[in-house]
Amino acid sequence: MKLIYFPVRGLMEPARLMLTLVGTSYESEAIALEQWDGPDGKQRFLQCTPFGQLPVIQDGALTLCQSHAIYRYLARKLALYGDTIEESARVDEVAEIGRELLTEAGALFWNPRFHELRAENRASTGEKLELLQSYFTRTRADAEHWVLPGRHTMADVIMAYALETLMPLHPGLVKDFPALHHAMTAFFATDRIRDYVRSDRRFRTWTVSLASFGGKPEETHHWTD
Ligand SMILES: N[C@@H](CCC(=O)N[C@@H](CS)C(=O)NCC(=O)O)C(=O)O
Image (cartoon, rainbow, N blue to C red; front, side, top):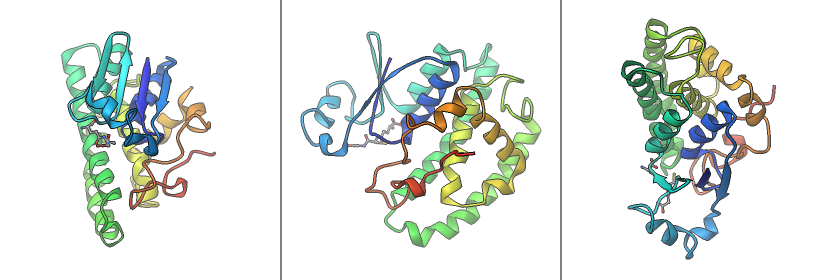
């Protein structure tokens, strides 16, 4: 399987985390920004996707774009989607909440008014995390798993990544929600994930350097302990 994206975490990271979690190796093609305007950049992907955007994966004869279609494909393929339609629906529910957090953070990272909006976003994100923590404690499978007891699903992957994304954006905020923080750190301490996130295989920035935030290593979370 080949994952094609920019050399950043961004929308491809949940796919990398899912593959790493189950120990499936993958090939990675990182498209440098300078390459994007040439024939090997957007032009190439316009031939296999509607809008010429990344991420794209290739798995045998299948070429697939749209990050959440990619996550769900991998979740089904890697048995990270539950065993019944009810379990899959709950996995989707939690993954969609994670998507909301990620989409909002990503939009803020790219907002030219980032520095003006950051404090206000911290307050509104704090309110969301308060509600999210009470939803988690009401519905969780156990202290480390959002949907299935003792077993990771796509929901754990996307939610852990979403919460990790918030850490450099709003330092100290996620720690104020101990149940969420515990589930997230437990995920990043899981076998294989632990090694991956501490290795140089993981891209060092959340997005590219053109963004207002998240394009520098110091604006991206790193696991070092
Ligand atoms: N809805 C798409 C959005 C993909 C997207 O926005 N990709 C960005 C990078 S994160 C991109 O390819 N930007 C370059 C461009 O649009 O030319 C998904 O979820 O995969």
